Length: 117
Image 1 (cartoon, rainbow, N blue to C red):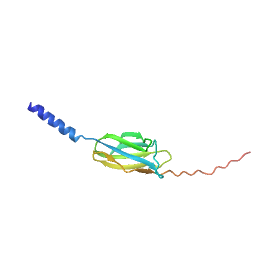
Image 2: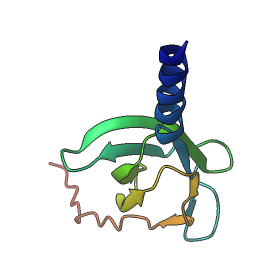
Image 3: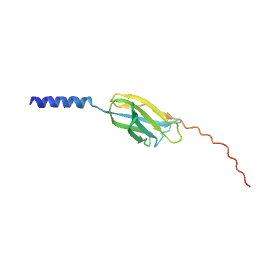
């Protein structure tokens, strides 16, 4: 019986220390409009292994659940916008990141000359 109590105590301690949390945030453009469908990836440091990925919803929001504590990079990609990286030190408790504002890429086209013969 004593062994059973010891086992249950150790199991309870392991569960208490293995608490995982969530990382969430919102992506907008420079006009404060939500960016729908932006690709958000969660990369674990130091080796940049991808631990999660998703697209933002209609409100520009994303959430990664059941994340263990550690250092991560949140990578945000959207066509015609500059890629954004945010490094975080996650403590294991739920974390709401500040809103990320993506700036549009400036693309200039070269002049085209059309001639006929």
